Image (cartoon, rainbow over all chains, first blue to last red; front, side, top):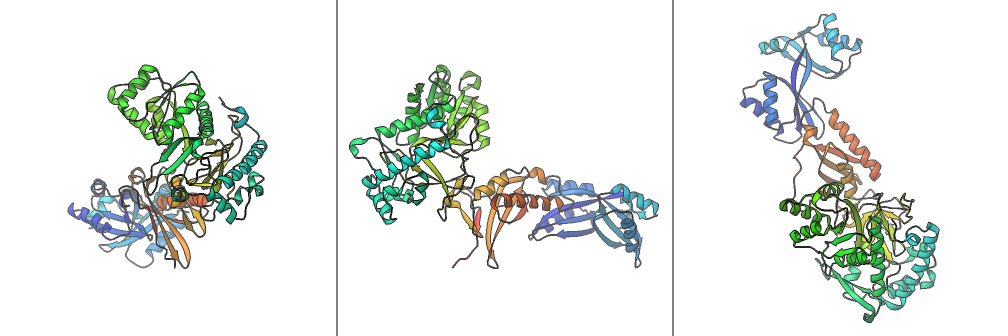
Length: 142
Length: 436
């Protein structure tokens, strides 16, 4: 029910992010979504991309501190309030969210999040009829 | 085994009494025989009769390495040359070398103290003991040599150099004990390996190592390669030479021959005496020396002292491992901080690599210490999905630093290989404070 996300540690100095993105570019790997969580000294760049496992190998081989995380991706209708409804479901089920971001893709809203209680999240998604996006479908949307 | 029960195991009360009497005598002696000290004591308004107990030592002036240089060569010597039977000189890489003259009595005290060290290591008159410190102006070779003879073991004056011949002697004579620098011990092990001599071919059982800083890792490596038990031997030529302190079988800090060398820990900045347990500069007063007695000589070595009884039966004060040099001390928010304390915290954490930077800034008139530390590749290799492991590590390092230094430091975790490497003495400290 989850998809792969790259988590890349980057130091907060010029050139580090571009190094990572160029490595992916050279391999013809396309970014679907990305976000950076930062502190003063460094950040974590989270990336959804085509061919995540190959991207992981490429970055790893280049000495980049990268990990592959399993995250949930929920498809929502592109209209106001849908994200609030979805998150309310998790809140009521007592599922805490470590991080979350969203983006629009081909007229659909995509909500990506990570929780430490993956089983409860999977149950909540099923029982409330939320639409979890399989990894293969996500790439087709591109 | 204990060489001198009376002196090594006397009650703290008796020891203080003995030290007080000896201190009074030595102050009287230098007052009448060393113009340098007479002037200093007079300037401080002290006469020898003011010194009654060992606690009065805090009234005495300090002596520094610079004082020895300024009075080169014999200005601090108390005994007439007719009484001096040996002269050692320490290497003077900057300025004059330090000259130390010994009377017959001094050489006797040295041999006595050295016999205490060797006995604590388990050496007896049945042993064959090789001295692989350099013989010559350096105090290591002859100092240990006389101690081995005093003890009654057979001394092999191997000195340094011609290491292959030394290895053959170790093997063929069945040498059981050795004294040298820890780095020479490792060189010896490498030479053995090259010659195809294994630790099973030799009978070394005890090693006494000192005269340069060494780590627990080096200790284990030496013990493993030479098949012996490695003990610490501390000393400095200004005070006597090797024999000032030694480890017993407990190997829990080093016992000081404090009936001859009185130790104090002082704050390197204020020069106030610090209680046992505090880190500070080690200061020695020679209580019985007659050639060149020194009052409150500042060693620049940083360590702690403790006087709790040792399971070995000795009651003498013990000194901890040398943590660094007082010249490196930083004062941050009025608190003395030694880079070596920070280093020991970093080295104690398996996640951290031994690469770090200390940056001191003044922000809103307050000092701020920033500690940048690289993490090990192993910690890094699996990557991170959240910043939690890194911020947690920063918090752990900061908490440990706070408990050791009593100040809050900003800890910044760095990726492996990102801190600049320096050749030789690392410029790990960056003090940005502009103090007018």
